[in-house]
Image 1 (spheres, helix red, strand yellow):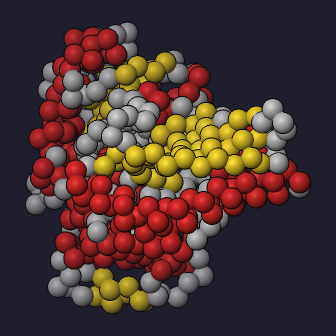
Image 2 (cartoon, rainbow, N blue to C red):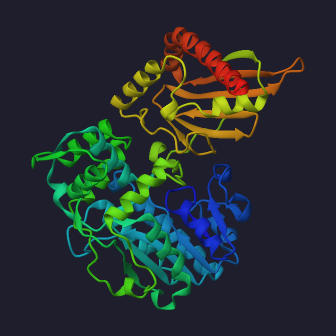
Amino acid sequence: MVTGATGYVGGRLVPRLLELGYRVRVLARDASRLEGRPWRGRVEVVQGDVMRPETLGPALAGVACAWYLIHSMADVAAFAARDEAAARNFGSAAAAAGTSRIIYLGGLGDPASDLSHHLRSRQQTGAALGAAGVPVTEFRASIVVGSGSISFEMIRYLAERLPVMICPRWVYTRVQPIAIADVVEYLAAAPTNAESTGRVIEIGGADVLTYGRMMLEYARVRGLRRVLLAVPLLTPRLSSLWVHLVTPVPSRIARPLILGLRNETVVRDPEGAALFDGIRPMGYEAALLRALARLEASQVETTWSDALTASMGEREAAKFLGAQEGMLVEVRRRRVAAAPEAVFRAFTALGGRRGWLFADFLWRLRGGLDRLLGGVGFRRGRRHPTELRPGDALDFWRVEEVQPGRLLRLRAEMRVPGRAWLQFEVKTDPAGGAQMEQTAFFAPKGLAGQMYWALIYPLHALIFSGLIRRVAEAAESDAAA
């Protein structure tokens, strides 16, 4: 069983385990977020929550080996206790179910040193998993490099956008980055490696370098000239705010990552990794080139923003229940001289590099304001230029539902006084062509929500009228082509 399959690492491990011939069960709080994954029909999905122990017993029944790939990404001082409780719940349920092995991915760092809260919590989670007696194989890794990984995205945006980078001391700390492909190979190889049972396995790539050198190497590979200027007084809080403004990574996630970069994360004990003599981790440049090639080819399987905690923290996302009492609904309809399939292709291609077809600068302005207010902003883009699946981030939206050939519903993740959705639906027109319906839903929160809607409505009238027109034109152009 794999936990965290909607996240970055878990979403890549599942297909690898299937390739190796394993029968795989996936634990998810919301099974609908796995729809659209190419491997969805080949796994058993069970709904469960590590914070609700009563859901774990049935989920773990008959499971021989479990991968635990769950951890909080936020200011860990507030989340460490939650992570430890979740791990204890899971370990106890695994012991009761007779599970013989738990495999966990934690973080490198000398436990005897002054580790950051984030790294200390990762290691405490490993200990909590094994407290009930199930043997744990705990892999500890430094920065993971791959298309869509949070560390890679920070490096990419900083190096691409800033010719001169103002750098605090943490950029000169040594790290040992590892390619996501190598991480997955270690995780997948563990069940058949009996000697790794009950051990901490430190893993890393072929190179040890600093975070600053990683940025300069990225710039070199991309043919960019970049300069690093050391500013020792730049605090982790200021650094995280700077990352928040320049990259898609929000400050509440950037801060614990940056605090962790004050600690050296290099392999100190290579004996554990030596047990996996068939794995030869690649160097940083090779990992970088692989990640860039996948981005260029639009072959990004998972991204750091797939996990809802990347935008929602630990809050439960509001689920759309239809037009409820008190919800404000704005509907526009248009007949399109194209087949429904062409209309569906047009509205599912919105966002990312393509933009929003009408008044794109206003969409970007709204995203910029959201970023300044501490929200997710507009820079997350989209995982794939044409393909969408439930759970994908799409600029400042989250894909909530996709019904192929018929419907797309997006949930707003920008800061608004209430909850908002934007839905596109297409049906066959009996007279020929298609009927497209575009609906904005807003559930206001108090007086502030009502005032927000009243103020924004004239702008909506302009933007959404133009949007449905341009989508129809794009579909008709596609059909003509």
